[in-house]
Image 1 (cartoon, rainbow, N blue to C red):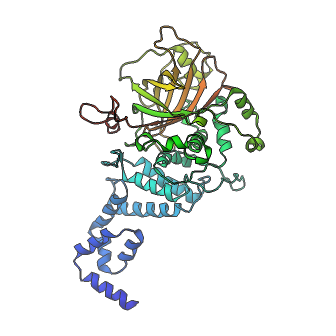
Image 2: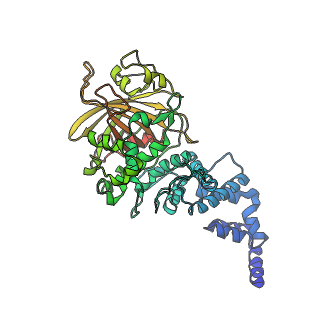
Image 3: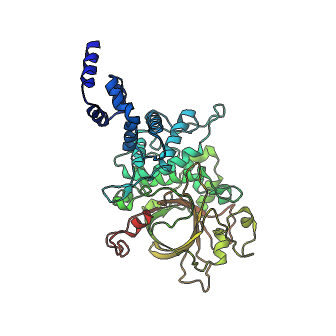
Length: 478
C-alpha cells in the first residue's frame, strides 16, 4: 500500500501544476477531491494553492456565485453546503425543529434567496433557471423534504416538538419543482387534517397575522399546499391527476425565473388554476367534527373531483393610474387596508385608506371562464415584508364578478379571493368566500384555491411581442 501511494505521489509530483489542476477540475465527487488533495504536495497545491482559485471554480460549478466572497470563504461555504445537503437526505423533516434539520433548512433557504444573482441559463423549453435550482431539485428527489413515505407522528410535548415555519416556507418554495418529476409516487398522509384546515371559518384561520396583518399564517398555507398536492399529484385521489399529467410542461406549475425582491411586482399575464368547495351542509358538518372523528368521515371536494382546471388572464394597471374600485369590494376584501382597525370598521363606513407596505400597491383586472361562464376580476397586489428570511411574498386580493362595468354595482354574485403570491410570482395559494352578503367570518362559506403562471400558448395573440420575445419572458427578465 505504501509503495502504491509513493508511486502515485511520485507520478503527480512529476506533472506540471497546470495538469494537476486540470485533473482536479475534472473530479466529480467531493470524496474524490478530498482523496486527491491528500495524495501528495503537488495534488494539495492543485487544490489549495493559487489563492484557492480551485474553490471559486468549484463553487461556481455547483451554486450561484457570491461575488463578494473571497476564495477561502467560498471554500468553507461550499464544504458546509455540500456536507449538510448530503446529510439532509437521511432526515425525516417531520417537524424541522431538530438542530440538524434546521441547519439543512437554512442551507435550502439560502439557495432560494441567492438564486438568480448571476446570469441565468435556459432549459429545453427556453425557461430561465439557475444552478441553485438544480441543487434544490436534486435534494427534493433524494430526500424526504416533500416526498414522504410515512405519516408524521403526533407532536410530543416532552420533546418540545412543533412544526417549524421556516421549514414550511422552504417546502412551499420547493413545491414549485414537483411537477417536473415523472414516475414519483406522491402521498399526502393525514389529508383529512388539511381538508379540515382549508375549510375552517376565516376568523379561526386568518391567512395573515400581526398588527398590520402582514405576516403569513404558514400553518394554514402549508395545509393549502398539501390539499392541492393531494388532488393534483396523487393518482389514487382520482381527481385532478390525469388532467394535470396531460398538460405540457409549459402549462404546469413551474419554478421562479428571477431573483427574489421585496415590493409589489406585476405578475405574469397567463394563469391556470382550480378551486374546491363543499356544499354548505357539508362544511357545517365538517366544522363540527372533533379530531377523533376526522378519519371516520369522508367529504368529496367538489370541482376538483371533476378534474376542472380554469384559465385566467391578468392585466396590470400602469403606475400612476387607477381603475374604479367599488367601496363594497373594499369592504369585503380590505385590499387597501388590511389592519385590525379596518376589519373592525362597519362595512360601508368611510372610504378605503391606502396603506403602503414597503412599496406600492398594484391594481389589476382579469378575465376567465368558470363552469362555462365568463367572469371578470378586479383586485390588488400588496407587498409584504420578508417572511422567514425569504423576500418576495405578496398579498393578492380580487373580486370575481360578472359585471361589464361598475355604473351600478350588483351584489348578487360576488366571490372574494385572498391569497399569497409565493416569491418569484409563479404560484398563488389562498381562500375564496361568498361575498354577496355582509360576511360573518366566524361562519363564512369558503374554500381553497390555487393559481399558477403558465407560458403563453403558441397561437396566443399575446405570446410574442414585436421583438419576438414572449411577454412573460420579458417580465421575468426585468
